[in-house]
Length: 124
Image 1 (cartoon, rainbow, N blue to C red):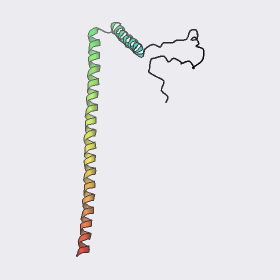
Image 2 (cartoon, rainbow, N blue to C red):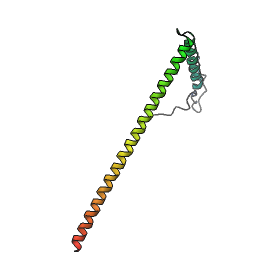
Image 3 (cartoon, helix red, strand yellow):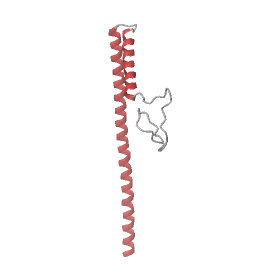
Image 4 (cartoon, helix red, strand yellow):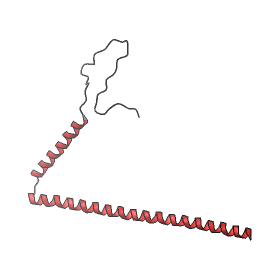
């Protein structure tokens, strides 16, 4: 992937040395709009749209507040379930890793016992 310079900045073409300078093409843009300004415009538009939707909703304010609260409670419960599930996954991963380490240790001990027994047989 080629590097095109900093985001949100126009790139100027450098003249070739020893050549006559040329004017920019008519109507060519030399500046770009900063990305932050576009993001701010989108955020403001979303907030204004949400406010208008709440004002023009076909239900009472208390019903709307109840619905919003219920939505946040459900989202909180879903997040708590995900965290619990991840915690259970972590315990299962730990259990698997400890079991794997135990099996490796047992194999190593068996090999050492076998080597010790063979050495005793050879020396006696």
